[in-house]
Length: 143
Image (cartoon, rainbow, N blue to C red; front, top):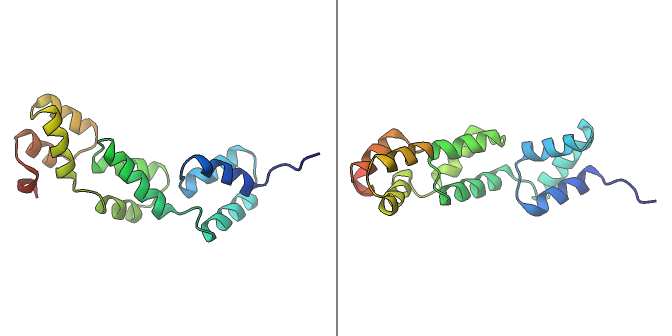
């Protein structure tokens, strides 16, 4: 008879599909019935070996969200929900193309009007960036 999978085995299966934050992985292990000590040991093992890294997760997730048109506030919120601390989230956002440039690219594709303003606000762009882009300013003028 096969032995039941360990918490590390379950964690590795979860990480096979995509990078996860430590909080997300801990929640998955909890939902699979692993006790607190098993979860903690698995997380520590994976962090020590570099397979679990919240900084790498934050950078990757921020880049992915930005590529799909998310503004800084939406990215910060998503990272917070995943359990990434504020400083790590801010560092990941700093490494991205500036928000004004990302918004400018979207406005070039969609146009500089109220519909684009609503779209950008819904995607988590700051009011200052939205106002500048909709007014037709280029990204250099937005600073």
